[in-house]
Length: 262
Figure (tube, rainbow, N blue to C red):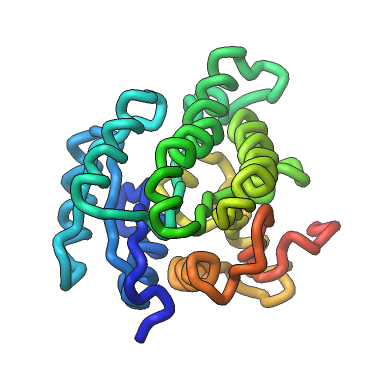
């Protein structure tokens, strides 16, 4: 039996085969979880997701539209899930967005609207989604929530700008949600991954240099892989991590401990 046999998991944020969320979905499927996916409504992303899901053998896999900036869409997502499932055991939030102009130039020039948009989609959406998922988690007797962050909160990463602030909010939110939901046996953590080559990362100028730097300077002298992030997520969704909540789990081959890199 797999580590997630019998568990039901919602995956949010698959854009294409390189998405961290897709790596997590594959690992969850390998370990026996029953999956559902959300998509933001973009026809191209839906086509990509549908093609990927078709490669997963086994049960019917729900795919539901959800624009996380809309409370109505979030409510509709869980209404659709409740029609298919009686409970939810794990939720993967791998959703982030910032206007491209807020990722370039000087940080002091970040606009109010751009920063608020980044926080709304990348951070507050976790709060909204978890709140809507509560009845399904309660039906399961608890569960595991995980999101994705990046080590641009404690360190300054050029061109991350508005997204860095949004990730700082996300990490604080993780701790507060963990404290609030712990009595209901709901664990909330975030994974801080290394700079993988994803669609979202392509918007960050200099991300390829960050990957080169990791291979040269990280204690393990290599970059992280999709599969490795998927395995960390499996651990967080499984009973093996039942004592861990409110944590930022670094999956970056030790790069977070490195100081001077030049």
